[in-house]
Length: 232
Image (tube, rainbow, N blue to C red; front, side, top):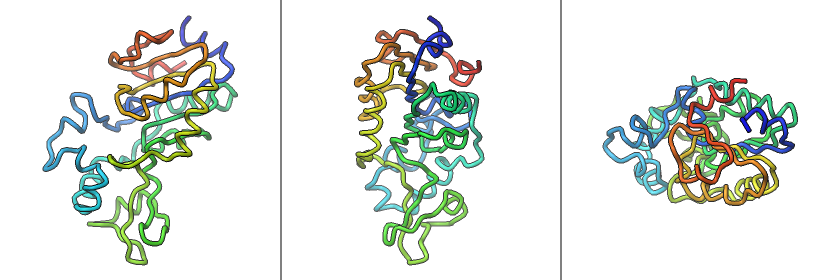
């Protein structure tokens, strides 16, 4: 069966996506040859994006974060648009994403489970006041709240736990769908990658530029760009 045929016969589709979903919107991924992990900084990106580094070197964290993580001019690509369309048609139950860019919501998707948080939510660590991504981008040094507290992005840094409620909802969605489409992820980041083991449905589809450890377990594997694949 091809992808269109699988979608046609599905009643509840869940989409599980990673960084590759947003690369066609101009947002760099982490692990490819030209990804963030292969660029040179004073500290390794994995260290910069850790809870310990944020607490100890907050200014250096924000220098990197503004430069590399806040891609606020990016627009949803064909993948985001198609998924929102499938949701409106009643085919797609939810989007589970490892991305923090908010592009699924920008495209019109309503049920988006953001495993790693979102750059669009930022909170004062002292009083809890909310701040937008634009506020962070336009600030300098360490962004401060009106109360004087330090503002922290609502993104899951290394050493931090995923949100329990988001994880529970994601597992419930995966375990109750008849089709799971996995796209744009190397399936090497845990615990997120482990969630796909809960799938018990009929069709497991994988769309990714490179091979993954899950290829042999899927009904349909497409090694291509996601936006192009979902242009139908």
